[in-house]
Structures are given as structure tokens and as C-alpha cells.
Amino acid sequence: MRPYETMIVFDTAVDAQNIQVALDRALDVIRNHGGNPGAIDRWGKRTLAYEINKRKEGYYVVAEFAGTPATVAELDRILGLADEVLRHKIVRLPERRAASAVTARS
Image: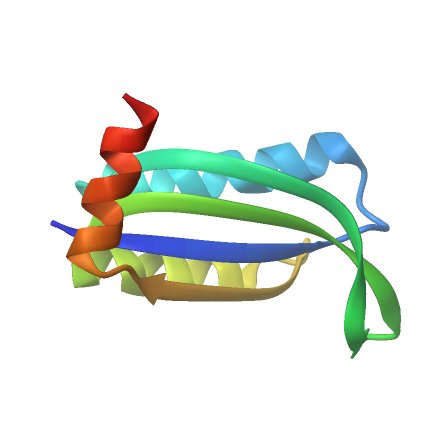
């Protein structure tokens, strides 16, 4: 399994409970496709660099996980279909950075 990181920007018009439900759905997709969710960092409400769908603010969440390319493809599909998500980006982490992050948390 490879280490990945995803940043999800949620619509601030959606309440916190629905944001949590959408995040849980994304984590369930990772688990159901053989992946392991890692650290979840909630950055909170931030001003966007540019407007997205006439929104000036977004709720940012960064999540690390380990998974296969099939896991990433399904997560990308689910996040693309979610109405609560304004934007998302999934990147593969270098092996050295992922290993150092795990030892730093231990």
C-alpha cells in the first residue's frame, strides 16, 4: 500500500454535522477498499484564494491514508459526486515523508 494525502474543501453553507457525515463516508470508502486512514487535520474555515461556485470561504480538512490505486480512484469518484465538497485533491506522499510522519506520531 502506498501513502497518500487528500485535502478536501467543504462548502461552509453546509452545517458541521453534514461535513462530518461526508468525511466519515470518505473514510469508509478508504476502509472498504483495503486502505488505512491515518491522521486527520481539520484546518477549519478559511478564505479561498479565488471564488468557487460563488463561495468565498471553505472548510478545509487534510487526511492521510494508505491505500492502493483502486482506493484512490474510488475516493476521487466519491468526493467528486459529493455535493458538500467544493474541491478536493489527492496526492501520493513520498515514502520517506510518510515513514517520518509515522515515527514522529509514535
